Image (cartoon, rainbow, N blue to C red):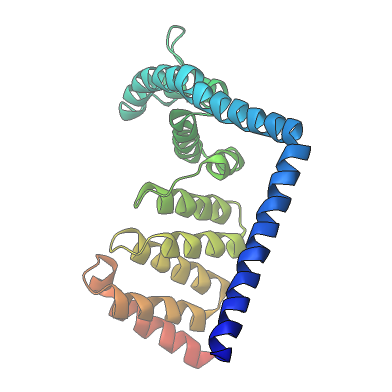
Length: 233
């Protein structure tokens, strides 16, 4: 009986503590109701503003950017690089799309196209500047953008940065197309540096993990060469 009474007392204490806490909460709300009201209004304004921005500003801008991209992409496909970049006097090129529609997906993609075009033109620093502004989680384009950065730095003679971006490209998405391709380029660049053991590690990774890839078809000869060169050091 004493034990039951003790449990009842503890239960009442917990209830009293909860009631006290609720009372404090009600008192706080009553005391600060004006402040809480303004905070709530502020949250509603921010949320409403964001939704309005997406619907009435970003949405139309995205549609306009996509329309502009259509013509620029057609010029790009025809290898009319200057028209793709700068437009034709009526339609915008990638330079203006990237600038005027920077907050849109199309504006972002325009930086990738510009990176490719500048690579073709041999303007490697301009290619780097645009590729660094491009963001993508796409299975193919994402790694290729990183790989193009590697190519650009290699053209500029910076082999360390080239390797860095090749490895980022290879590790960005694990597939049988881009991953082995950029592990291969990293390996070849390590060879250019004279780091044959690191080159060997890339080639062996291709042989082990990407047996169905194009690079795996002749990887044994690269492995043999890297082993031979490693043995001579």
